[in-house]
Length: 99
Figure 1 (tube, one colour):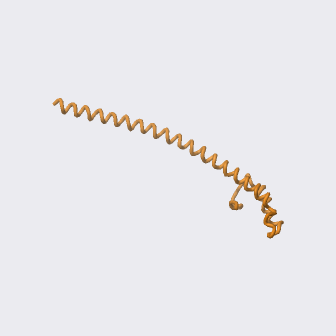
Figure 2 (cartoon, rainbow, N blue to C red):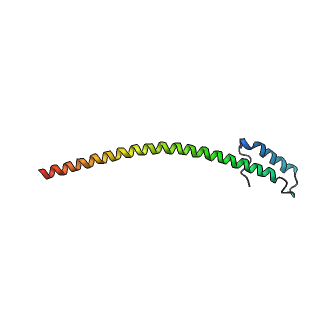
Figure 3 (cartoon, rainbow, N blue to C red):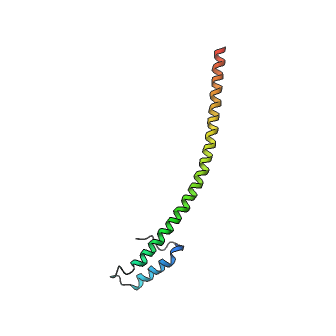
């Protein structure tokens, strides 16, 4: 099986046309007649999918790096704020004990 051929596959148009032509010219009873063309189309679709996944993964990696940077910055600010709050609490307790 292959994905729908109606949807755009710019890199695989030649293989798609070859397969369609083979299906039109070959007998339905000779179902193996177009196998070589079908294998060529499968290889083309596979490479198309690999390129798409590389692009998506690259975009995800870039977005993830930006998000990670923001989280680290906010995390540092969070811990600084917590430290300030703890110090204030200690000073308050110390002041209460001294009184």
